[in-house]
Image 1 (tube, rainbow, N blue to C red):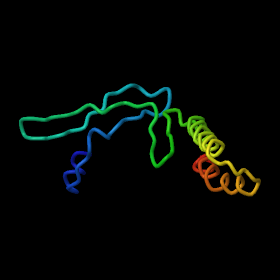
Image 2 (cartoon, one colour):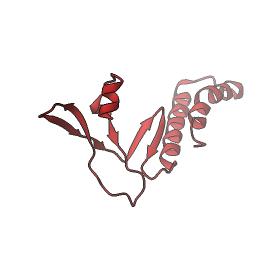
Image 3 (cartoon, one colour):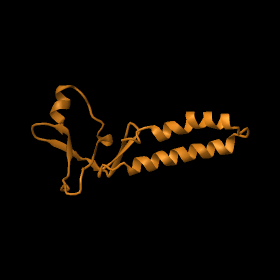
Image 4 (cartoon, rainbow, N blue to C red):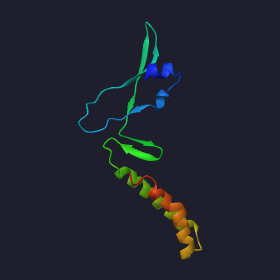
Length: 114
């Protein structure tokens, strides 16, 4: 990656780079990112290992199960439902249905089929 980044003149934010090992049978290796490469001196930084990471709103875990994503979507939807319950005083069927479709459904439907 260091050579590719140098060739394409692209800098990486090393603090945001992380390593996730997929599967249970993978060995625990340490991964390093070269910060600087001179003829005499090489500076490297070990990358942080994570069990789960969020990318574009999708929670990816090292076992590739979607249960964490579904729990997160359910919790968000429940928080929005609680906000609707606390703040809306005029609760007719039409108003609640419109609020549910516009505020709650997007949280439940986004990436849960994954």
